[in-house]
Image (cartoon, rainbow, N blue to C red):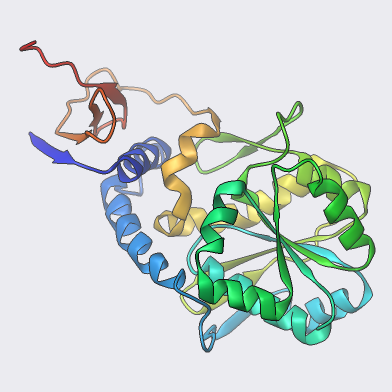
Length: 298
């Protein structure tokens, strides 16, 4: 029996990947996790600063010319996912929007932790200043007023659907299918889009050097808007789950998982552990369950 020691984030990511993917049958969760670990290191390189040249060879779906035309007439919400080269996807849109309206701010909605982290990334900070990108903290009470004023004046807001943060508790969260599980998503963004009649566009690095963009989504039904955006991202998540950066926190938002038959006879073939917290945590590889380690010798 193997015994492997992991940092807490990689440990939690492994548990979440096993729990989410083992139902489907065509993934080997451990292999997905290993690729996830490799891609995390790759994505860390993107944090250094904006790319000198963006080598996206394909732009699928709603075209850049269509987006420019939309932006010339009204504001919109660009909805992203922490997937693949998400920073450089954002960079491309920021540069395009700045070319069209160089005198107008772009609002980037972030959580307080990301706000603090971004402040330490000088090259990205310089880029945001040059492109007139203003970071707005999602948990602050005034965020709604800032966004409202901005979009009324035809501005663009950039938000990450998997950021899942906002002001206070959400009394009416939206339940959406993820891969195998059902997750809970805050409804504030979608209520905002509905109230001010703002279209949302999803964008993601669908394959290496390729961006796919959804057509603008505008609906009076906030559940429809949320479901449409999640469906757009879900296709890519299923295609290559290792490219999603936030596996380490996925367990916080799962509300339901499917039942699976024939689990009583499983046999644990590997144990993983994490000693960054006390007591030590152990993870059983077959089901991804986490337990506190109890030393029988004590």
